[in-house]
Length: 224
Image (cartoon, rainbow, N blue to C red; front, side, top):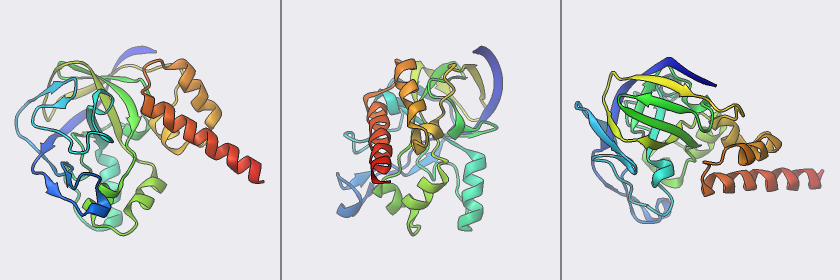
């Protein structure tokens, strides 16, 4: 499907505020750049992410397939209600806090025009021990996984700038219709095999996720 659909808006653009030291049990490298805060100006967006942003654990995070991380305001509000605390833009380590767009239900390969950039939905966020530590919430990874409102990683197809208030236009949605949530939960491994066949842009990490889901379902079937 090809269309131009005004689907949402950027509430905040967030980059690293400060690197934090992380206990060894919660980090492979001992430091994290998860502490992201909104900035008031337009931010250049490059192939590897936003100017002023970076990752510390480059083995497990970042790269062209995880250049930008977006999270939905509606999901953040649900968590804020459940946790009984404010979760300001950047709390999830996101670069873009978006409203009006079901980020976790975006289709893998879907393309968004924001400002003069073009971004492509590439993968779900998989919660890690550093995210658990940063949240300060008991069993956070387990709870975040159960909700499956993961937000979405994006790759940058056209570099440009993004600022708060920019409209998000969905300009392309692949016909396979397999979403970020579908990929994260792996509830239907047969559909994920379709994704591997139909979406040539998926990363090696995504192919590994698909393979893990396939093996998990096969093991479950064999145990019955």
